[in-house]
Image (cartoon, rainbow, N blue to C red; front, side):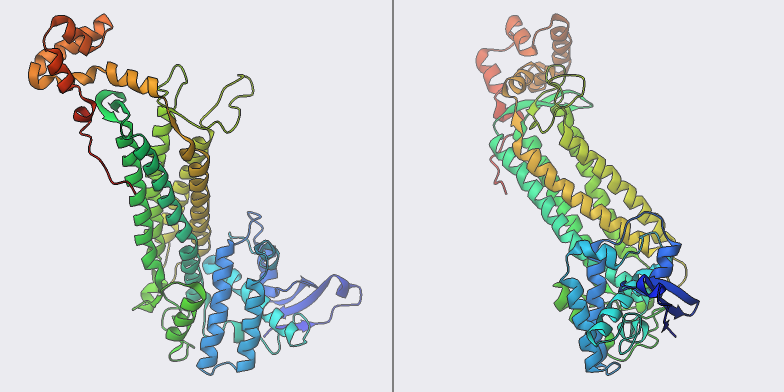
Length: 481
């Protein structure tokens, strides 16, 4: 049982002393947290970081919702529930920047997230007791375990908080993917009649329209947003009420349904209780599923950003088909150099996301029997990956893609001079003869079309018909999003 004992007069100015199951411990006198948080601070000084704000917000909402459910189930009094809920509301009304001091637990902590859960329990209890006129550390009338944590365990509350936090953070991510898709679609619409040379194997290929290339990027990003939305749904399935091992020990009848309904109101998401609470405790597959969708998006975004860096390479010795907005000087030694800085930032972000996905894979498979104790790192990795991806997408769109411009003379030159424009001539001249013309044109340093004219192999009317840009590219009017 927790107790608070009086420090000496000099000691009382800097810290108070609480006693828990391990004995007495000094706590800063004004700290709203208690003994378990203090022990975690002494044990886990690893990264210097604290929990993502979305995880804190989700956890505080769980405590508020639990108070409602517990009052309805008559396992705490109305006055206790009111004090808990008012304290939760006070926390949610604070500036998020204050939370790192209020809940200073390192993400690298003991398994399952007990320290994180207890930090929230202790802060809410101390706030509640202060409202009741009691000193900090004297857990009457609200006790962190007996009242704030009533009908819960870290083992069912942490995975619930993790899911709710990811639901919150993934919504802006899906929106940013759609916004980026629309940005590419706007470029595709504006550039739908600009011909260029396609490339396969990084070699000249058949002609296409610049708009076709960019509409394909838009389509990919729409798919990425859909993958994220699909992966959000399993996160709505909660194991809350499973208690320590999914058996529901100490949980009153009807509690799960009631807390789920209350969390729907607080979080604005449609939620459901898992049909098998033991399975919900053992497996963190919904997190892995979401991470996999984010990984797919990161891989596709890496490919697209790499393409854009190639298309913008130059300005004189690269492809130079598009111009990127200049956002900063590109060199400390080469005057006037401008680099694809935003795209480089974006690529680094996607690589980091892929690293976090690897962490999720390892943490997910590390569950043993009735619990996965690696959840703190799972939550930190996935929330961080989601946040940096969302911010990178916004920056990529607003500071790069929206400002792209085509290099029309270069695009026209490539379109007219690519040897593979000869592909359009092969139905008339045959594959072998056309291949020989390509080889000869390259040797002479002239275009295939010029060589065909020189040899008078086709009439001018036949050439114009075969080399019509719309015909060559299979152009069709598109309804752009």
